[in-house]
Image (cartoon, rainbow, N blue to C red; front, side):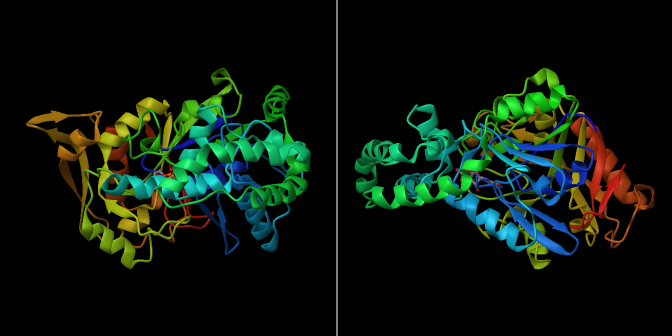
Length: 423
Ligand code: IMP
């Protein structure tokens, strides 16, 4: 293994947690660098299902150091809840295996209120956020009025620090019928959280770079997907962080020169949650997958929108992230289909285009140019090596690699750790 970034190539939920878990064995450190508890990574290990929101999935390995980097936004109460749930499942979490960046920003109760209030006020233009306060936390960060993890170190100042920030938001909250912010309650909550989290707080930039200097390998666990990236996604229907490969560097303090490998993860089809254009959306494939009990969000439980594989999106995401390889997950979701479709290009106002256009209005006008492939109509879940995949499944994967411009290196055929095939 080498220092590797794992990124989602679609709208999140590509099954990155499982690929990260699979690749963790070859790394000593696993780091998160962007996003917050809007992420929901499901990992099934030893018959147990673990759902991770903020903690890197490396925590499921006893000997890995997990780092929540400076680019992540941390809901301290959510983090403690997640730690408690994992501990209840037998996972050992100590300051030796979980470190939190002192520069990461905190998501507080008022960020969640603001998230709901802003969504309500947007009306038909709502983004369909996860309601976890992500946008307002990053907005405060960029506006230079955020509270950071380091601020938890001195509880005597917390009341003052929360008070003046709350005052900034009360007027907006009142307009939407929310608030005012309950400052004493927030202070009590985070004072208690500070006590419990303090041993985990560190200068993770130094920790990561010294680990690299010592020859340890770092795996960067991407959250969300490329099309939720604030710069490169389907703006404004995006999240508020850089979810593409570059974000792993700014969000961790590790130089791009240290990165040796970028793996993009995509499903064998496409899904998205929340609002926004989705060129290959198809209700039949949605009904099929929902009927199999699949494609319900790990964070919100929402049914995901589903569609055919979109190679236009893949091609662009592979380029932006500089992917060497792609990992294709959920191939088994397509087992029963007689015919599969891949969207190779879009038709926009009479022109055939290979990359997504810049505005959601244009994307909404795009029509998919599909090609058809014969389905394998065989249960893939028990297959143990790539060579044993049916020829039609391999042809489908080869075509995806050709269209995306990166080789397929891993294929997921079920949720268990063993159901990942090396191509
Ligand atoms: P936010 O990140 O909660 O602000 O939500 C912004 C958009 O990103 C919404 O469309 C969400 O559904 C989407 N989103 C955020 N995190 C995830 C994720 O982990 N998986 C899929 N969609 C996500």
